[in-house]
Image 1 (cartoon, one colour):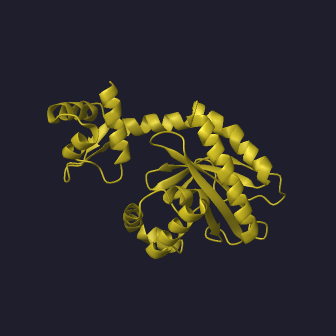
Image 2 (cartoon, rainbow, N blue to C red):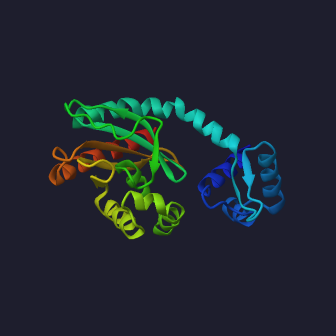
Image 3 (cartoon, one colour):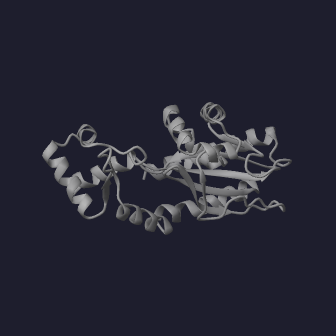
Amino acid sequence: MRRALGLLRVLAQHQEEGIDLQGVMNATGLERSTAHRLLSCLLEEQFAERDRGSRRYRLGVDSMQLGFAALRRTPLLDALRPFAQKLARLSGDTVFLVIRQGDYALCLLREAGSFPVKVFTIDQGERRLLGVGAGGLALLAGLPDEEIAALHGRHAAAYAQAGLGLAALLKTARKTRAAGYSEIVDTITPGVSGVGVAFPVSELTSVAFSFGAISSRLDAARRKEMGALLRAECMAWAADYLGR
């Protein structure tokens, strides 16, 4: 059972590009016969799938279904909800929580702050390409440049529509890494800006919180202030959560 769960984690880590049998053996330390037997079982139960052309393995539809079902209500989400409400109180702005879902950032929570002008650029349950919103950009920055380039190649037209060529996407990712938080200004909705921070909640999974506000409220000075505040709060929360 433990070996099968470890194998599912490996498949999840290679979900976009897939992983072949030799790669599974290298990542898990399993012998060929054992790795093949476990993969065959996962295939039969639809917890894994194999591309006929490349013969690479990925998570199957039943693994995905379990993951999506778990996102609807989990102890993690229950723990993050009051934290989102705290962030909304601290900032007065709209707070968004997103998680990576393949090439996309899926919105799990949205909390409105006290500022009279509300920013609702994405609804709970909606998703955007990684790098388009502040939270998605924070998640994107955690990927190596070559993975960002591959992601951009898969969705070049959609990124172009958002005004994000590959060079611009890489530049914003590097800037985010250097600052410790992401910034967007007028990239989704004219007159709306945001800052975001990604942090781990498990060995495999990171989430990102972001603040969204009208650009006149979230100018460069306040973006710096709120980015630092968001980073400090998120890192403290993650350290407490992972240290339990």
